[in-house]
Image (tube, rainbow, N blue to C red):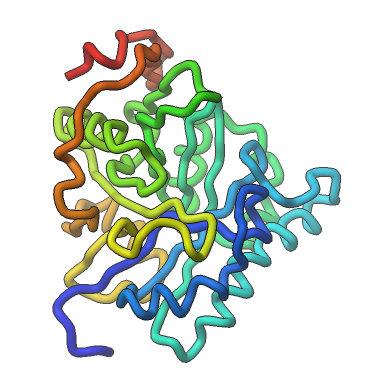
Amino acid sequence: MKAQETWLYETHFHTSLGSACGHSRGPEYLARYKRLRYDGIIVTDHFWRGNCAVNRHLPWREFVDAFCRGYEETRVAAEGTGIAVFFGWEETYEGDDYLVYGLDKAWLYAHPEVIKWTRQQQLEQVHAAGGCVVQAHPFRDRDYLNAIHLAQGLADAYEVGNAGNPLPSDVQALRWAQKNAVVMTAGSDIHHSEDFEDGELMGVVFDHELKSIGDYVAAIREGIPFGIKTPPGHYDASLEMPLLQVYEHTQENTRLIRRVKELF
């Protein structure tokens, strides 16, 4: 193990093999992440209901095999580099996205019903298998979105730093997360090996090495402290955002709460 005080991990990472919006294969990123002293990467390609690159008409096991190839070739290429590569995925509902961590290819083989789960079923079943769920970029503002969907209580943590977000979206996410005392994460949401300036890449910071994806899951679910890496001054942005409707999803119901400018 390296003699060091902190360990840095990328939590939101796309490859062109798994994500239709990906522009680089996983191994193409490694030299850059090594240079920037990242200790690990979690590959989170877009899954069934998201912008997945895999043919959904394939038999289920073939779909899973193809979906996992982006992670698998990245892990193999990273051997000997000092960069750990872990597996996850990103699932989509009504424009709201969720990073799922802690499960594996064998679990996917055995659970084709995953493609039909509600947000609540997703959390319950992922928990039952020992994993966790993080809502990605919960205040994302894009022209293809007409509302914000907050999964209050239907995720274990919330991504408050995302390099692909407009800055006000991250500011809103941070303040909402602080107000609700939830676990906060950050990740680059990178789709191309040359995306963003080096200083714009994000991640999570630990005072110990993560030996497996299970260590990350445990930190989120058990409240083990860790930090987030965002650019200096990242949260100094204006809060001005469009007047999108905000829906809050809980285990009991879904309700429209208020316009986003009125939240904080």
